[in-house]
Length: 369
Ligand SMILES: *Cc1c(COP(=O)(O)O)cnc(C)c1O
Image 1 (cartoon, rainbow, N blue to C red):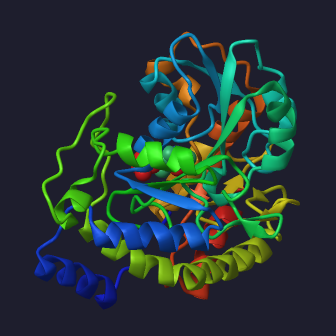
Image 2: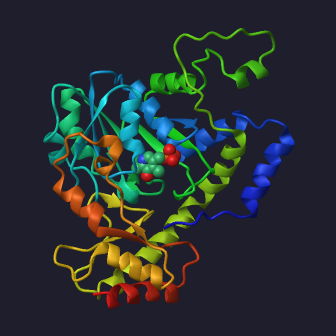
Image 3: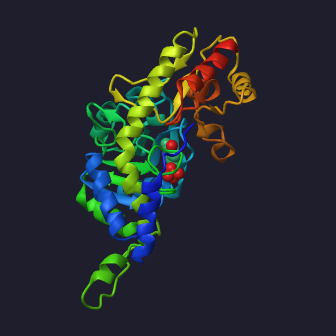
């Protein structure tokens, strides 16, 4: 559970953009792209309207199309799998590791075929996926690994920002994530030619951007070499994002502090497993989940009801796309995913949460057994 941390600074930044008269994609978007890419140790950032549209562009850049397969975790927000269908390819579901909620090299390798063109590795709930290990399986086969870092702003992987180790990463600024622009996303990449193409594709594949045309001294007639999209971010959103980016470190530090406290309190409830840092990095604890193992005396749904009755708004854990009607008929032999999606729940964790509030949540969890 997450409440965006928004203040007067954000309000003032957006008001400035309104007064400037330029509200569409312009100088603020360019500034946000540069700042975000720098913070995430990426060479290039391309702002988009959402993470979903950034994932779509990422698959286009990777050359994925009809007849190709893309390996994705079923255990993710459904947009991860949907993006594969946008390019006419087939999503292939791989299982996850129960300790992290993420793909592993073994689960990926188990579903690779000669048609696999890309893998979308998700940092689920902010927990960094072991990207190097997944790439070790994929790189030699010419399979592009896209990192769905929607949840991972402020997480780290092997001492660097999460997302920095992938050829392309996609980020979300939806209010359910740690850093929000209302709606919005970003594609980061180390490859300049991909950044250039992504910039074009997000703006109708125009050869010259509207901002460049506006700034030019003479008349410029643009050209459209391929079918593009309108996946632009606005300067209003980017202004918000710039303030949010400055807050990121403090927000993550606070979440890690609250999560450590939860882990300590929950350590005294026998059997409950919790989100934690994996060996390969640190999570921003965007989602603080707990997992009730086999044989736990109370079921997940009963515990959710107990929390609800106590006035605590927890949520079911991460969804699994293969269980949704939209993916009926897609092969899914995913034992760990089944356990995770049906036995996990996400506890409330927000910036201003007090020790008393945390204790109350854990009391209800403990009393349910
Ligand atoms: C939130 C989320 C998305 C979608 O992000 P939008 O910005 O809302 O499009 C994609 N993948 C994952 C893993 C997410 O958590």
